[in-house]
Image (cartoon, rainbow, N blue to C red):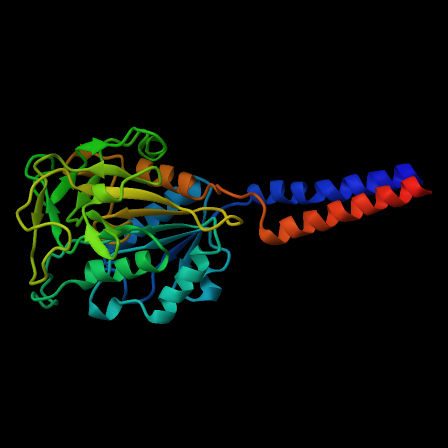
Length: 336
């Protein structure tokens, strides 16, 4: 009888571990925000071609794709990752309920979000005085999830490291230090076509990226020392000045601690997008081979790998209860 009780208790204790092991092997789901009218040039021939190329490569890498046509708590349910692309116009903005849904989803823990953007280049259908929505809207998402990363209200050009034009910025340097190396491995040559760049947010102020860089915040790609801040509209950059030169960050990653009992959240921010007629995953441009898709696959493997506390609060309470039951059972058996 005592042996049976012992076996039962052992089985009870290891069951949660088995369940956790099974869950860890689940196929990761990547949500892609394709809300009608939101993503710039997504309905064009090249926009659709690039979307299928992205989805095909992610699927081949073992991910499951979920196209999201409306951001709600229900549509985000079951997603391990979310892709936010560059916006089309002033009507593409996120509603407060969408921002809240993204925030609540991310703060569950163990989620990965890729926030892409666009330069402040003024398309003919936009008001040349104010293109700030291109950076402002993704920045609202970054603020909501507790990220210290932001996108600059400007454009980045590089007269030295580019593909045929200064606005077709090519990565000059890939970060091979620490955990950044996992994301950039095998992907030195990445194009950021018509991008803005990544800055920081600290103590309520927009700041250069260097002021938020640290163990949990790293740059992934940056321009040559000749990278130049350019403005196409009437809105000034937030952390830099027009005409300023230097090595500006084209892509950055962040690990966000969400509490003692939650897995960490992960973020990648890029001055160019994964969606649209110009995108980071372009395999070749003007005859030059590019490695953007390798960067993308690396990033999603990193981003969807859950790190941090293995146990949720519910599981911890359950284990404590089980331990109490075992102790009581041992005490009772010894008294008999």
